[in-house]
Length: 437
Image (cartoon, rainbow, N blue to C red; front, top):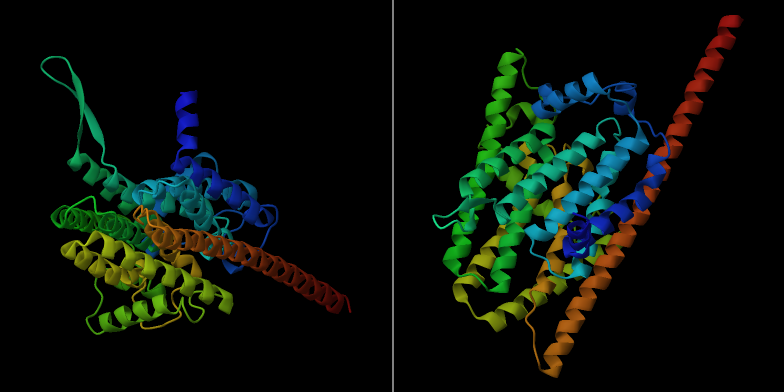
């Protein structure tokens, strides 16, 4: 048991877990050691887990009541923050398998980026429910992981030999169930699973090990599973709403999930595309608060584009290249699927906490660099080295900059809380003084 654990920690998956866990504790330690307030935390103090069934979060309602009954739900930054970081670190380890990353450096960078991404800060500012949201992130990634690494069932043959056979039915059911529960906790993590699967398919095209027909069947299998997960979510939601005799809130268009008007769809698709491009020039969802982020994303985009062109020139597989091009066009929409979870005509209804799927954009360059073919010529070797080292340095800079601004946001939240406390104290003191007069 101990040897197996050590072996797993030495694998790229273990590297991603360790990187995410250490970076998560280091970056988020300030928030875990302090109490920072906002309207939601005040409303849910001392007990509460946020909006449940009325916001379509039937699994959050169920888990919240179970936890409240057996050990209580409290806003405990250290405990809840630790659980969130642990869940995200475990999810980072699964991401390595989903994307089929083999290099430890790629795994370490993806793990670190996963836990310092701005969405993590937004989640940890809601400490009363952050542990549930971290669990939802893990389930969303687990759903994708199960499809890429199907469950195997051991069977004994007629001559007594034991063999393991993939069980696609069981895999399909468990993956869809994990996706449904993740949606039932917080709907915004559906794009995370979808974009990971799209990027995994792009990686399959780049590596060139599988034929066009194999990758196409795999894509349809992934799509069917995502649809099943969504369907299961809606079925349980309908049952829960009926049993509890309640209805969905219209907050951020929640009541419209599942039946979006045809007039709204063009806006949602257009805004999703524009939001993705704004990573290169602008500050969308708080993901690029200063121009340096745009510069880094533009550089990563350039390195990725050059890498993909170089790979396909060497591979020369027209059908696979065409499929990869289609998947690259789909990728921005898979990342921004959160608009389907928030189907309104307002640009500002989507907030930072809802866009964790965008972290997958940063995973793409690492995956592309791993797919670069091995070459023997001096010029091509230099090109490989420039692309790989350039990607490593750019991703490292992006992670460091995000970690820095995580601290900036936590400090701002801390002083905002202090100002609120001072203002409240002044009001109470003035009221007591006036009453005394």
